[in-house]
Image 1: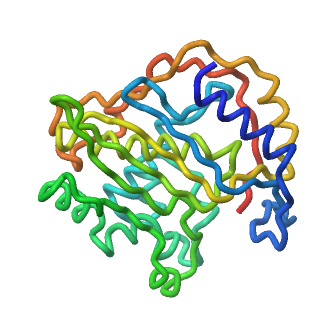
Image 2 (image 1 turned 90 degrees about the vertical axis):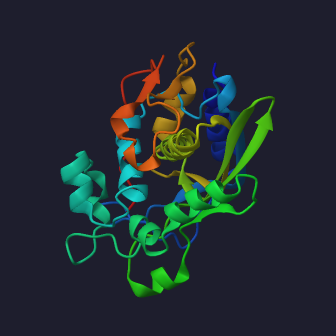
Length: 279
């Protein structure tokens, strides 16, 4: 069993056995009913990417290419326009969060990245001094929330540090998430930010090091318990999946494409499970 599969199963068990019920829940299902959940707080995991540990489960298929395309939409295109996500990348699921303008998700995610010039500032900071301790992406901007309606970011902060080991420089990353749907989004969000970590490392010609993942509220929705038990019953793949970025060192961040990523030795258990999303 891979490290990710073991952590996944342990988290499912902990939520089902020790989790508490949400109160005054905001999300709704598409039928209008309140989307309550069972949750735990303070979930933390550590993966050493340099040793082949990746935060992706093999207990069900995870749409990695789609996840990375969404990442590109946020950090390269730097837009809140869902039409771009759909037309350029053929990613459709953000339509449920579009505002009354019929086009955008409000001053959120990519629009926040662009407004504060976050990626250029991050890369410039590394260029000037790779050893500084201020390499942070923060999407939690109250001014943006007051400017428009829109879904508040779940994966809202990531932090980056370098380490020299021998002759190599390794880039470590930490993802902080306020809320996470354990069965649907956990490994999607984690692997998105691993991909971002790899893109930044490639930009400078560094190796990827450790990935730290903290979720404040880790939950399973009340219509997902059957799927949770199914996942616990599955036998994971014996192979360790590995994400690789097939571009030369020092390829500019802006030139990397979703097609440059390849997930090797990924043999997830099928069939895929269906989930009714909470909106």
